[in-house]
Length: 228
Image 1: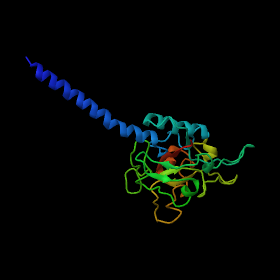
Image 2: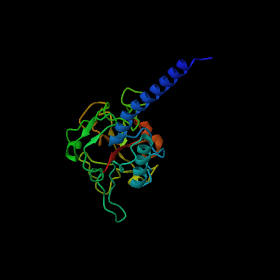
Image 3: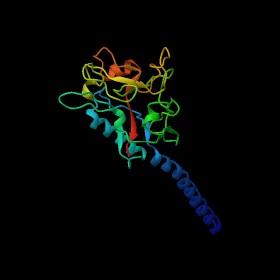
Image 4: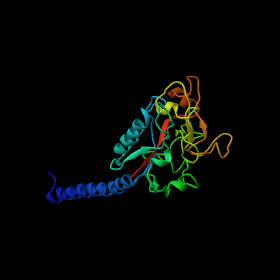
């Protein structure tokens, strides 16, 4: 039979291990709570039909909640075009004032102007809500395309030529402007390296299906920002 000393020793060891586990979890929880920007680890799965802005925002909120950052109000970085009597919406106007940081505490941008200027968004800093690096050029599969529907300054395109897959309601015909989360294009150029306006979507199904998005190196991913 174990002696009283051995039993006491085992109890102390168990309590010590539990305490260390709690202490180790605290920094991770604090980092999650402070996260204010991420690239979604998954898309909704229906191409560029996100259920409009509301559906996209809900996707951001759901992923943030699962990652421990659900106390904030999350919005997808998406613009919409003027249509059906409704005015355009600019992505830059719906993400708050910043600053925004990833799950590791690295600041992406201090404000809206810096975000659309000399920001700190790279493949290494554009982490998912899980704190993981998103696949880019050279990875298999490449998933660097991110839906934005926006011009380089974060504003919406004029009505006419579709750049939002019918304001995020089409998974067939249309086109959506995409950014490159890894800031890399082939061949490299200021446009191809743009985080928010690299090229429009295209593909055999009409430009907006999940297959179309995958065909150019995407998965229907979004940029999510804490708006508060």
